Figure 1 (cartoon, rainbow, N blue to C red):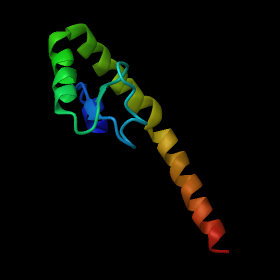
Figure 2 (figure 1 turned 180 degrees about the horizontal axis):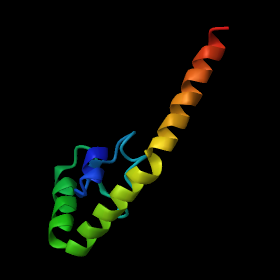
Figure 3 (figure 1 turned 90 degrees about the vertical axis):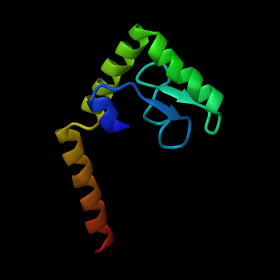
Figure 4 (figure 1 turned 120 degrees about the horizontal axis):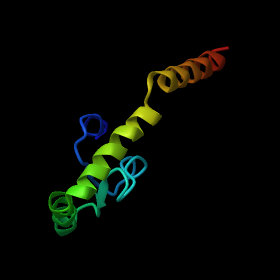
Amino acid sequence: MLEAFVFRTPVVAANTTGLKEIVRHGENGLLFTDGDYEDLAKQIRAVLERPGLADKLRGNGLEEVMRRYNAERMVARYRRFFRSVLRRDK
Protein backbone atom coordinates (compact mmCIF):
# COMPACT_ATOMS: atom_id res chain seq x y z
CA MET A 1 0.00 0.00 0.00
CA LEU A 2 2.78 2.44 0.87
CA GLU A 3 4.48 1.63 -2.42
CA ALA A 4 1.22 2.40 -4.22
CA PHE A 5 1.12 5.78 -2.46
CA VAL A 6 4.69 6.53 -3.57
CA PHE A 7 3.89 5.60 -7.18
CA ARG A 8 0.70 7.70 -7.04
CA THR A 9 -1.61 4.75 -7.52
CA PRO A 10 -5.06 5.11 -5.92
CA VAL A 11 -5.42 2.67 -3.02
CA VAL A 12 -8.51 0.59 -2.30
CA ALA A 13 -7.97 -1.45 0.85
CA ALA A 14 -9.95 -3.64 3.23
CA ASN A 15 -11.17 -1.89 6.36
CA THR A 16 -9.02 -4.05 8.64
CA THR A 17 -6.59 -3.41 11.47
CA GLY A 18 -3.36 -2.00 10.15
CA LEU A 19 -4.74 -0.76 6.87
CA LYS A 20 -7.42 1.50 8.32
CA GLU A 21 -4.80 3.17 10.51
CA ILE A 22 -3.08 4.48 7.37
CA VAL A 23 -5.84 4.75 4.78
CA ARG A 24 -8.27 7.57 5.48
CA HIS A 25 -11.40 6.80 3.45
CA GLY A 26 -11.98 9.43 0.80
CA GLU A 27 -8.78 11.29 1.65
CA ASN A 28 -5.77 9.16 0.70
CA GLY A 29 -7.55 5.97 -0.33
CA LEU A 30 -10.83 4.12 -0.18
CA LEU A 31 -11.79 1.41 2.28
CA PHE A 32 -14.18 -1.46 1.71
CA THR A 33 -15.74 -3.83 4.22
CA ASP A 34 -13.50 -6.87 4.51
CA GLY A 35 -15.04 -9.80 2.62
CA ASP A 36 -17.69 -7.65 0.93
CA TYR A 37 -16.82 -7.96 -2.74
CA GLU A 38 -19.72 -5.77 -3.82
CA ASP A 39 -18.33 -2.98 -1.66
CA LEU A 40 -14.87 -3.59 -3.14
CA ALA A 41 -16.29 -3.29 -6.65
CA LYS A 42 -18.14 -0.11 -5.64
CA GLN A 43 -14.92 1.50 -4.37
CA ILE A 44 -12.99 0.50 -7.50
CA ARG A 45 -15.75 1.94 -9.69
CA ALA A 46 -15.59 5.18 -7.73
CA VAL A 47 -11.89 5.54 -8.54
CA LEU A 48 -12.39 4.67 -12.21
CA GLU A 49 -15.47 6.83 -12.75
CA ARG A 50 -14.36 9.91 -10.80
CA PRO A 51 -11.01 11.19 -12.12
CA GLY A 52 -11.04 14.07 -9.61
CA LEU A 53 -11.31 11.61 -6.73
CA ALA A 54 -8.50 9.49 -8.16
CA ASP A 55 -6.28 12.59 -8.44
CA LYS A 56 -7.06 13.58 -4.85
CA LEU A 57 -6.23 10.09 -3.56
CA ARG A 58 -2.98 10.02 -5.53
CA GLY A 59 -1.76 13.35 -4.17
CA ASN A 60 -2.81 12.72 -0.60
CA GLY A 61 -1.35 9.21 -0.60
CA LEU A 62 2.07 10.47 -1.63
CA GLU A 63 1.83 13.27 0.94
CA GLU A 64 1.00 10.69 3.65
CA VAL A 65 4.14 8.68 2.90
CA MET A 66 6.34 11.75 2.75
CA ARG A 67 4.95 13.04 6.06
CA ARG A 68 4.98 9.79 8.04
CA TYR A 69 7.87 7.88 6.53
CA ASN A 70 10.52 10.42 5.63
CA ALA A 71 14.15 9.66 6.49
CA GLU A 72 14.30 11.91 9.56
CA ARG A 73 11.23 10.34 11.15
CA MET A 74 12.37 6.80 10.37
CA VAL A 75 15.82 7.44 11.88
CA ALA A 76 14.18 8.86 15.01
CA ARG A 77 11.93 5.80 15.29
CA TYR A 78 14.88 3.43 14.97
CA ARG A 79 16.82 5.37 17.60
CA ARG A 80 13.91 5.18 20.03
CA PHE A 81 13.51 1.47 19.36
CA PHE A 82 17.20 0.63 19.86
CA ARG A 83 17.40 2.78 23.00
CA SER A 84 14.42 0.95 24.47
CA VAL A 85 16.06 -2.40 23.67
CA LEU A 86 19.35 -1.33 25.24
CA ARG A 87 17.55 -0.12 28.41
CA ARG A 88 15.86 -3.53 28.78
CA ASP A 89 19.21 -5.31 28.62
CA LYS A 90 20.61 -3.47 31.65
